[in-house]
View 1 (cartoon, rainbow, N blue to C red):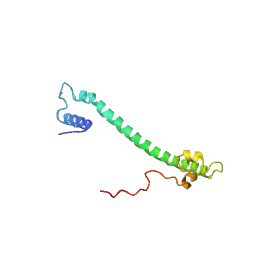
View 2: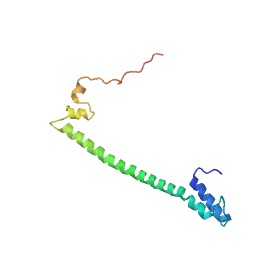
View 3: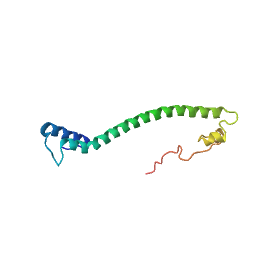
View 4: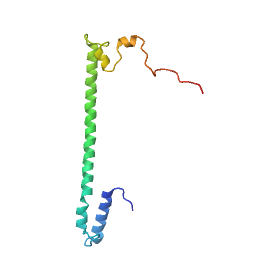
Length: 121
């Protein structure tokens, strides 16, 4: 038999040992000694499972926080657009990564745009 999970393999050995030869010793160990020296495998797997649950919960909380932050980000951008001091042509708006109305109206062309693919073969 092949076991990919060492912890499961350990449990199969311990269970079979207990059911069939509990009072015997193998590899210089009693069943209790075997369980004791291999307990770290079980403990580390339990720790890893707990960490995976923690990560999963953290990802969900991050998604909720990101949704709220996106909403606040939009509100700030809309407020900048509506501001008489700044607006859609301001350096502030441009520094946020947006194209200002002046740049849009100037016919500014972005490279890599709507060029038709070559049909030469």
